[in-house]
Image 1 (cartoon, rainbow, N blue to C red):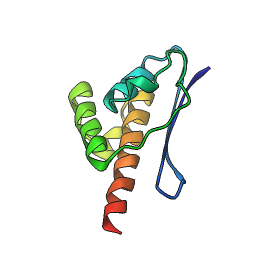
Image 2 (spheres, one colour):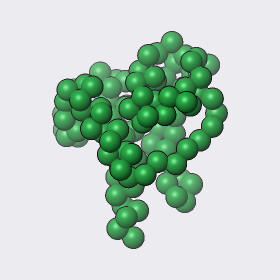
Image 3 (cartoon, rainbow, N blue to C red):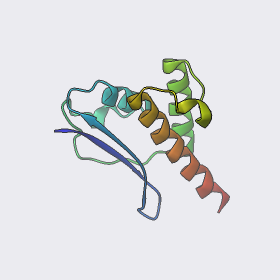
Image 4 (cartoon, rainbow, N blue to C red):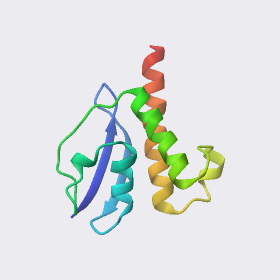
Length: 104
């Protein structure tokens, strides 16, 4: 059991992925940052899905920066602990995709 959290673009292509074991509290942090606690089943996700707006992802990035107290600069993410880095990469990949979608 565990948390496999994926982000998809409108075409259905996976653009973000985070994996946490069932005892890893960092999964709960990602759910919280996304304001998606209703999808957290404790030892795993509940297997449901949701759609997030660009504004919701931007809010998650702001919450990440407040929670962890660091910037979203990719050059700085290399020095982060693994789970913190995968949370940041998940949010940044979703945000990049949402931003690209707005340009089309």
